[in-house]
Length: 77
Image 1: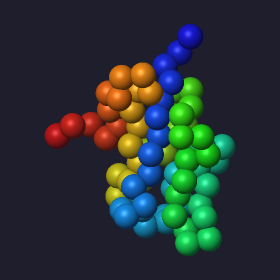
Image 2: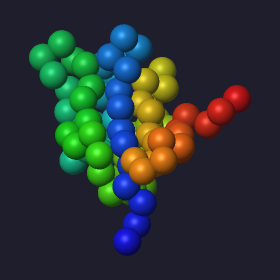
Image 3: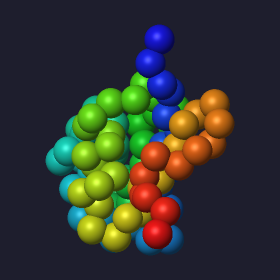
């Protein structure tokens, strides 16, 4: 069984670029205010979700291991 990820979007940081939806259309949606939301806050680890987090121009997406909370993205400085 693979890792499970917890996916969060900081709506105070999100600028509604839509890059997350472009990278992972099954993983993110924009609401009427163009704020991103994960479709499932807990999901199987997959490259599209990670690409969406990495492609966010303001790093509003945090991906962590669901069981431990260890951050997968963004990397620690």
